[in-house]
Image (cartoon, rainbow, N blue to C red; front, side, top):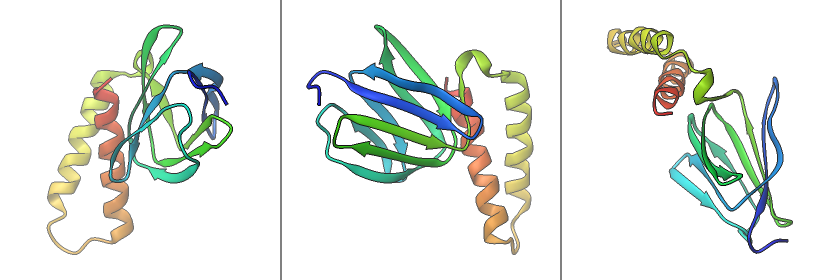
Length: 136
């Protein structure tokens, strides 16, 4: 295990976004807030929520919007982010995202009465995903 770097994998159902790159650390959107992971971090598995993942790659700061999923930190200095979707800033169509975000916010506002928990959670999840893309 290195004292200066960890191996980072970011995986989606569509394939690897990053595969075994060396990074000095990574920040992930945890259920209870941002989670910073540095070399020699204790092993853990926890859920992540839609948000922004941050790390440095080759001296450059990188931000990715990710959807829901999990992060696993392995004792051997490897961090694996498994998420339902991910996109880099260059892959975001801001006008389309803003338009869809307005629709989702409107749908959430209309739901003042009874709403199924799964439907409400899906709308909240999509809102968070869209907002994460705009923060890139």
